[in-house]
Image 1 (tube, rainbow, N blue to C red):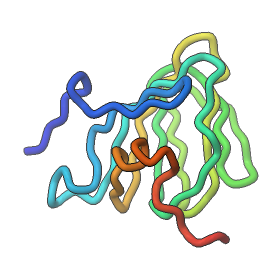
Image 2 (image 1 turned 90 degrees about the vertical axis):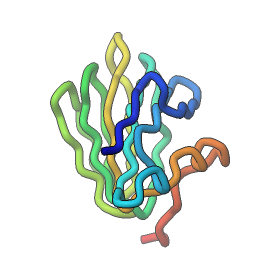
Image 3 (image 1 turned 45 degrees about the vertical axis):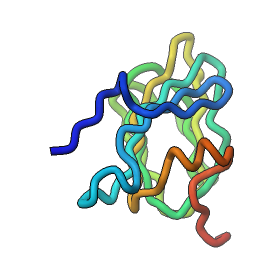
Length: 127
């Protein structure tokens, strides 16, 4: 059994965003997922980006505006947003409190490398 404590997880930070890396490539041989717990400060945003892995965002608390491709939509606690492979996406916290979501992507990639390099996950070819 593989278990990661959120309090002991590796942390990646960007202005207004804090990501706890719960699972990534190389952590567990049988896993082909990258999973993060992300906290977004009020008014902060994840910059729109695209990458090869497909992904879901599950909003745990707060509210935001999600961009997927050319579509934008308000999201809140309990919502799941599917992001197809190589689709441009990002989220902005539109609420007064912290927006928290869990992200899961497959195939797995190194989230730690993403933060250390200061760029996005491995990118797919332009569409």
